[in-house]
Length: 280
Picture 1: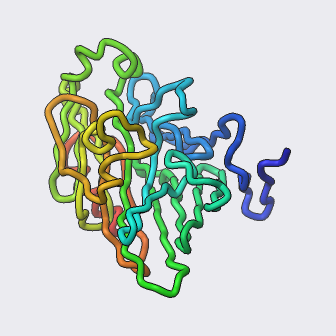
Picture 2: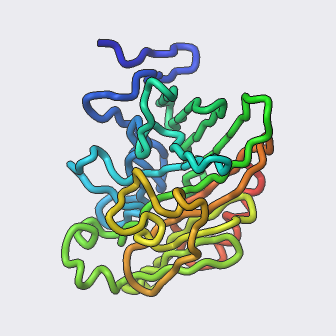
């Protein structure tokens, strides 16, 4: 059975049947910042070393496969229906929606078409900047105005893979989150200058810094409560599990949005990266 093909002109492997029996992975980044992502946007990001400086969390050998990841959700505010640009985590029926993944040279593009909305999410890491860019484009192919909400989601790591996977009595108290001026900051208490951030090139209409507030109790990335309700809760806390979720309400066709995620050693670079994103 054929799941994809090589595009020799673009030097990409194109996966147009996304229900693969196993993960098809790509590697992003050529210097200090790197990411490992699969064909459904599952994966993680790290700085220099995946063992001691993970930025986003990843649970190996998980069920469902390759969770969590770097996801973008779209919600149709007219009827409350929502989906993700990558096939997972929402996983709309492939008879109702069209999905594809294009793995290129140090970038990956996820594309979807559902309910007359075409969307793409490109993940890439600039050569000289320690950030991962999420370039999101949304096109309204219907003959009516669409009221949409766009949500980002990634789960922050505690920086060390051992802390991510054991001794939760300690790890739940070793980091905190905050939000200011459109920037979500993840503060690692046991590292004097350890900060991670997530931001965008727009003024958010909502945010969540806490994983369990965004997803909700007895739920998964498949059906986060914030997306279902159409509004992030503005959560943050000293302690607990943390995430990067920014919400932007769009009246299509307005242009797309761009998110940035990365690590930095002081708060000032976080402000610099927000300005960098506004140029994208």
